[in-house]
Length: 141
Length: 141
DNA sequence: CCGAATCCATAATGATACTG
DNA sequence: CAGTATCATTATGGATTCGG
Image 1 (cartoon, each protein chain N blue to C red):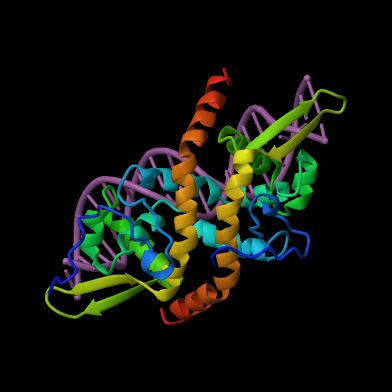
Image 2 (image 1 turned 90 degrees about the vertical axis):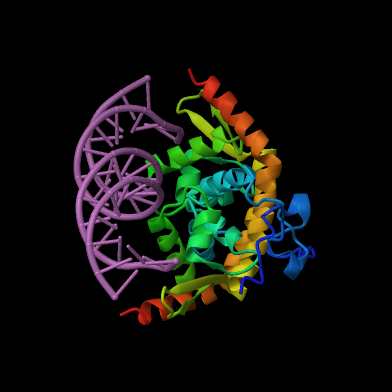
């Protein structure tokens, strides 16, 4: 019955039959890289912060006002994480009061491209996902 | 969607100056949708599971063998989550012993496209990210 | 074989108060 | 203004055990 043996996972084929897009990632340590990036970008606030910086630099509290619901602590932590990963730059102007500006780096802007594509998928399909959830949750009792 | 034409419309501009890709998401409730999807796909195992199903359906323990390190509990939970979101289908054959097959749905396969693109970015840029981390961590003392 | 149930450790997030 | 420090709460992941 096993008419579809695994190709011993040598290559690719993530959706190539559908779109010609190929992911050369499969079982390699690259999986770790993907997951690593996904984990950074998949946390609760990173994408919101990146979006807040998409059209230019922002000061800390500007950003905070742009992202309703974020706590001071989480904004700090998220910015630090993005800065550590080289996605966001932090510029301190030692004035009184202090001024700190955040902006996307070139790497950060380049990440925006695939994130935006995933975002477009999300916007286009969130309805289907929510419908599926409603069906699943409803049929569960 | 391949090679989005330059809509050149409302003010959004997430990286349009770089690539012509536009994200119409900015401050809208759509942000929530993006984050929602990102959270699903950003957890520790979802992408690995989806990859494991990319080239065809798999039984529970096949999948488990294909994903080194995943616990039974997390495989179950991840599959349930993906199933709830309509990304994976679950087919039970009531034999003895029972047989359960998992496969990507059409929605799940369509998600693979932007995820693969993000994956390609990750593979291409993980080196830069890790270098940035080394610099940041080193300069922190 | 597939999975639920239970228990536990750790990490992520949030609320609040304080500081240069 | 732009953080840090502390504490409480919740989410996530893993190990083990049990059941259909």
